[in-house]
Amino acid sequence: MATANRLEVDFLTSAPDLARCPTGNEPEVALTGRSNAGKSSVLNRLTGSRATARTSKTPGRTRLLNFFSLPNGARLVDLPGYGYAKAAAGAQAQWQQSVNDYLSHREQLAGVILVTDIRHPGMAFDEDVIRWATASEMPLHVLLNKADKLKRGRQMQALARYRQRLAGGAKAQLFSAVSGLGVDELLDAIDGWIGDRDEISPS
Image: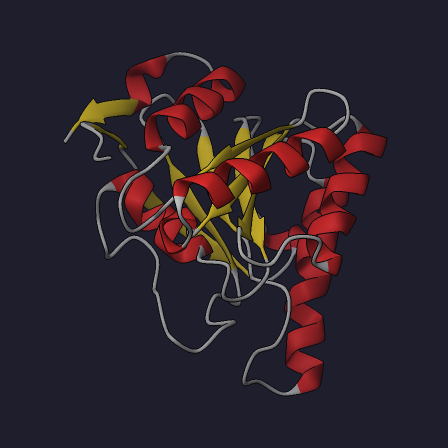
């Protein structure tokens, strides 16, 4: 299902670690997920532009903390993906440590969008993020991405299982970066974290 709404964003900067992230008190919403879960495609669907985030058939292409500004001053942050990537082990460990540091210590963080592959539930990193968000009382919104790969019945089964496992205020939804399924629901969640809806404009 297509949506008439999108996030209006401008690229702000990239940072290799927490120390070099932008200053200021503007609230931030972070996208995180395992490599190959489709995180960059989700970001591109949200903004209505394939050029927002680089997508590739090679997992692990996002290797910096990428900051995008919204018209109301808030920020969207694309975090490096977890998991396998064609890079030296030391480099991969470095950018994954930057994700840990950002999630654990970034005071501006207002909410986290966890992008998962609906066909592969219970992956270690996904479970780690869910446990961390629950323990730290961080607002969490789980995307069961690539829902277009499953028939409707299996989509709803997967969603029901995820919702049973989530605690506190964490939420889960079906999503497809390909078809646009769930975009409006996700935009509403982001809107609830960062304030008014001025940052969302008609496409």
